[in-house]
Image (cartoon, rainbow, N blue to C red; front, side, top):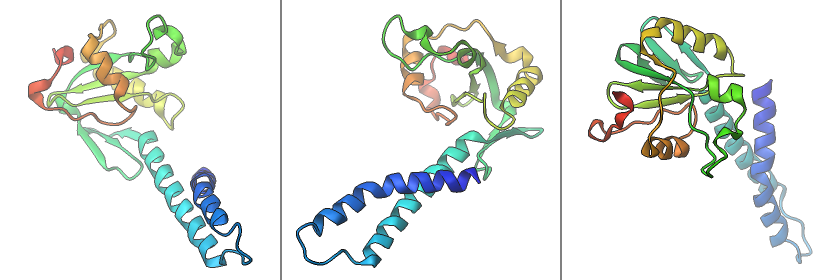
Length: 183
């Protein structure tokens, strides 16, 4: 139901500008825009809305199997847990202004984790409020307790990289350019 409502809301938002352009093009015309044009614009909006909602859903659903971390409600992202090198607790705040690093809620900073893989890939995860998010975080931290780093200090380059990154989206990197986070 939430998917339908979200798609509907995003579809209406995406259709606003094309509808305004359509109405403006017929503003001084004695005729009204054709109904087919309205329907085409609304269909375009709903397709954009559905695409946006599917992307959001893919970011929200993560689960653990015995050997992999599987992401997306369609299961497109599969990360082997055997290549997990480190789990860093906490992510740098997205606010790049000095002195505002502590403006994120305490719970958000504490529950966010960064998964570092052997190939240099990084996965910044914020799972609170997501389906099974707290349980998944707890299971990851208990299964791989030896790889958890609660006191890691990010370098300036790592902070810049993670501030630009989208949450719950895998960052693939060239192993030659891997930062010190792996070590």
